[in-house]
Length: 535
Image 1 (spheres, helix red, strand yellow):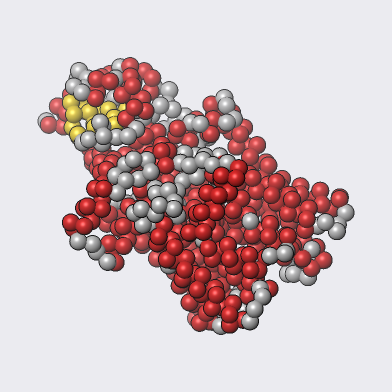
Image 2 (cartoon, rainbow, N blue to C red):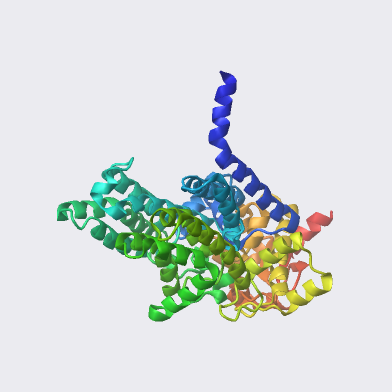
C-alpha cells in the first residue's frame, strides 16, 4: 500500500519536480560559477528583501515597484529570485509538456518536438533570465487554452469538460495577474472584449455584458488598486511609469529601449517575428485562417508585444519572445486537427519549422544581424557563456569579440562585464566588512546590484528613507560608508550622492578614505571606521 502511494506521489510530483531541480541547479551554477544573475532577478531580489526585512518606510519603495506580484513572491520565497525563477520555469515546462502529451501524434513525435522546443534560444534565455516574461508567458498560454473552446460558440463550448460560466471565471482569474506583471497587458482587455463579443455574437446582449464583466472585473480591480497604492505611497497614481527605481524600465537597460507606434510598430514587430518566431506565424496561420475567434486568440501574444513597442517598453531581447513559444503546442494541436493536408505532411512541416526557428534565432544572436537591432548586451553575455561552455573559443578570438562588440546603447560587451563584476565585488566586500549598526549611503536606483550581493538592505541608507537627506548633508556624522558610481559608469550623472558631493569624483570628502576603487564603482569609508578595523 505504501509503495503504491509513493508511486502515485512521484507520478504527480515528477513533471514539476524534475524541471524544478534542473533549473534550480543551473541557476545556482550560473551564480556560483560565473557570478551571473540577471539584472531583473537582482532587482527583484533587492526589492523583495526590502519588502521582507526593511528598512522602513517600505511602502514608498515597494508600493511603486513593478511588477508588485513578483516582488511579494520573492519576499515570501526566502528573498531568493533564483527560487522564484526555478518555480516559474518548472511550471512553464510542465504546462508545455501537458499540451504536448495531448497532441494526436505518436510518442516519438512528441519527444522530438519537445526537444526542439527546449533548444529554442528564446525559450532557454527566458527561463534563465526573466521571471517576468516567464510568468507572463505561462498566464498567456493558460488564457489561450481556456479561450480556444469558445471559438466554435457557446453551444460547442458547453460540450467541453468545463461549463461556460466556470470557464469565463477561470479566464478572469488567469487574466488578472497579467496586469500586475506587464503594464502593457492592459491592452488585452479591449482585445478580449472584442473576442468575447464575436464568440457570443449569437447570444443575448445580457449574456455578452455579463461575460465581459466576469472576465474583466479582476483585471480592472487590480489596475485600480495598483494606482491607488501608488497614490498612497508618493501622492501620484502614475509614479511607477516615470520613477527610475520603479522597475518598469531598469536604468542599466534604458538606452536599449525601443519605441515604434502605428504602422511602424507593426513593421518592426513583423521583422522580429519573421526572424525569431516564424513557426508561430506559419503554424498559426495554417490552423486559424478564416476562423475569426481563433485568429483573435492567436493574436493575444502579438498584442502584448505590439503594445510594448508602442509604449516604449520594448527591449531587443529574445527573452520576451518566449511569449509565443509557450502557447505554441496549442497551435500545433489545432493545426494537426484542422489544418489542410495529409497528417504526415503536417508533422513534417511542424518539425521543419521548429528546426528553422533554431537557425533564425541563431541569426538573431549573431554579432551583426543587420536586419534587427543588436540584442541587449546581457543576453549576448549569457549566450556567449553558455556557448563557450559547450564549444570554447580560443582566448584570443573571445577577447577580440568582447572588445569590439558594441551594443545598441554604445557599450562594449567587455565594458558591460566589467561593470557587473565591479558591482558584485563591492557588494561582496560590504558583505564581509559590514557589521550590524553600520550604514552605507547609496543611491539604490543605480546601485541595487551591490545591495543584492551584500545581502541585507537594512545596512544601507537609500533615498526613500527619511534620514537620507540629513545623512547626505552630514555624512561624517551619519554614515560609515559612501558608495558612488565610478568615472566609467554610464549612469554616473544620475547618482544623487555625486550630484550633491561632486568632490567624491576626485579627492573625496574630509574624514573619508577610499577603500574600494575601480573605474565602475568607488567605496569610501569613514576614517574612524578604518581606525577601529585596524585595532
